[in-house]
Image (cartoon, rainbow, N blue to C red; front, side, top):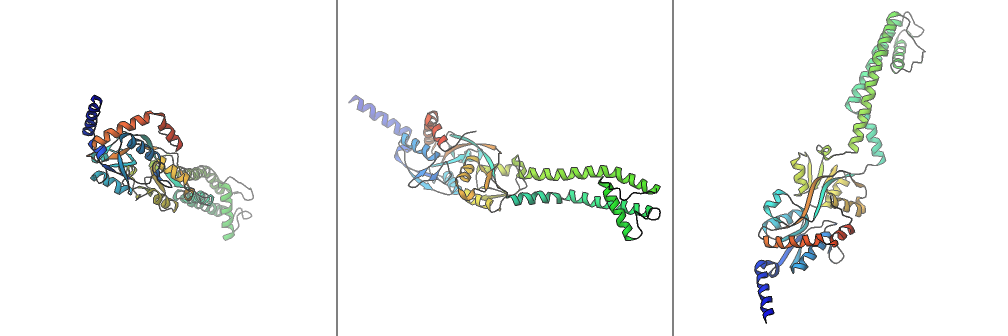
Length: 357
């Protein structure tokens, strides 16, 4: 009898401490986010689903799953329309003012996906690098120098050296030819000035040509280097002036706007965003690395997309709850800590090929 009274007393204390854990059927919101939440043949699967099922079982929580899109889900948590969101939400200061977060169970970062370039596109990019403004300006100056010194050589040599610099238009061509082979240091020797003025002209052309050709070569090399770097960027800042995409109302979107990205397109889900990248509607798609990587590697339709080796914007994932469920948040956080301290959590992460930063 004494044991019965003790049991009843403990049950009363438990219900008073966590009244909403046992009495209510919780509304649990989610949206598809492989490998954290994804639809299986008969039920939901993924890292977060595994974690939630274990938490709910240990706490004796009755719940129903409510599918929503990402933006709708965030609003529902803020307004209390749903009790819990089990998606991998990034903890931000703005969100923390509007909802409760459990203890973080996964640390990640953002990264960038781009469309792979075909061999033809790479060749065209290489070819077009020769036609930037600086290169064309240099080419124009080169042609002007060749024509100017060729005209001067013909003017000084046409009477004293008619064998090499003929009269009339043909002689002008002789001068241009001599100027070109001299400037480029080819020096065939088929034409050479004999007059004093012609030789001075040749000296000016040769010395000025050495400096100019060196500068033009450097300009070409610089153009090709810039083009190569633009195809293999090494930081997210290189995309600030580029049209990029991300998920609407996500932590990544806030990150991009705070860092003055000029042209950010938003999408309701990952598939539509990656499809836009595939069709060249955006030049890059920026989002959480584990979600991006898993989707691109597992979906054949996105095999032409690639993840750049760029990591930024450290993120900490957690479950979110409405502000009036602090008691529930404390109980869930405690269970999350217990599960993370067990060996099972590491096994689950490795099964989904996930690793924390």
